[in-house]
Image 1 (cartoon, rainbow, N blue to C red):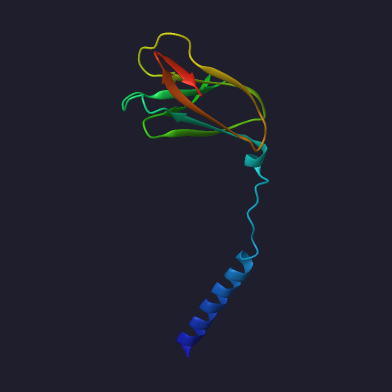
Image 2: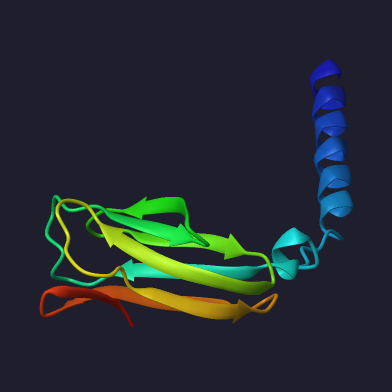
Length: 120
């Protein structure tokens, strides 16, 4: 009798949890819906040991190693996106100026064009 009583209570708890949670819904109205997304990928010719720094408005926000992608958020408004390869580098660093809008995704690929790094 006692085992069936515990089994019945356990079943009741599981049923209540199911019915309570089945009405839950995930919406995208939180903070991420008010932000823009930034993705920065590495081109294939950077080399396995070279690290690529990702900067937003002059501040370093992340680093990308081989096989990785930077995935971050931006507040709405104007931003300057740039990248910098590790090691000795001559020339200007590539920059892109964007006006970020909430809910939008901005994707760039850092690549070598000759001896210069560019953002495509």
